[in-house]
Length: 340
Ligand code: KG4
Ligand code: ZN
Image 1 (cartoon, rainbow, N blue to C red):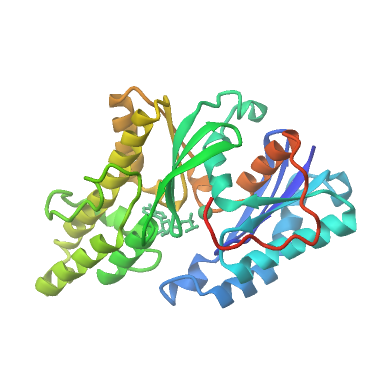
Image 2 (tube, protein in one colour):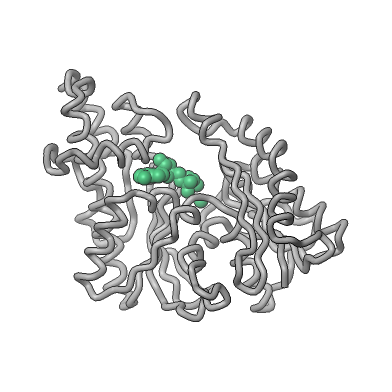
């Protein structure tokens, strides 16, 4: 069942073709450079870029998969959550394609798709979900930080989420305080490599609470107060790696401890992680160590599927179609701005 999927929820325009659990093409046009100048995603600019790039990206995906629109059996697109005007570009294009090609239209929750991207690594790809294990999934990006109990394919419950800033947002805001470029996560990751994570003791918010919620805005504020008191450290090239490593350690520590605790409590044998922050090398390394210590299997989305992509939208859409879910009526709107 070849299916064309598109994703335009934030600052990546993506088109993918999937067929029977196999990703035939996954084309991503990233807008990171465009937004860097503004220090964050500008919705109006993101929307214009999606409008400009969506058709070329979708065409490229079809070309790479050596398929024509007449070979397709369904159209899928992200319906939400995300930036409403950006979502509208992908969703409206998908509606038009489904209507004109007379194909079923599948609307996908972006966060739900992240839950399944760590499984798109099977070899051969048709075995992607054969290895599926009930798991606790950490979704950690610039817009979301969430722990989800995935009992079986398409059956999941949100355990907790951030009460304020997402972890990626915290990385980006701390990087901005340190005068680093946007997006700040990769910059901090890079600088932290040569820093001492114990140099400064930044707070680990909500770690002592028994629930699965996160809060990162206080950590950012604490770094700000620290820099206000020690303004010289910010411009000290020797000190910057220590500041980055210490701030990163606080974020990673909270993410890992809460994820492991949730997995043990829900008695699953597997942890998965996806979303842009999952590219963080310290998080990947330390999650692996913690999982090994706790006898848990770990499945991390590969770097190109951690960030937003249409492959995960298509793979989930195919699962939903196979499970007999009804396609969306063409006139369905985008999703209200809520989580999973
Ligand atoms: O999933 P994503 O591409 O977009 C959404 O937010 O939906 O995630 C982007 C976020 C940004 O906040 C970025 O700073 C963060 O992921 N990020 C990282 C790393 N790479 C990307 N954070 C920490 N370390 C990284 N290596
Ligand atoms: Zn995402």
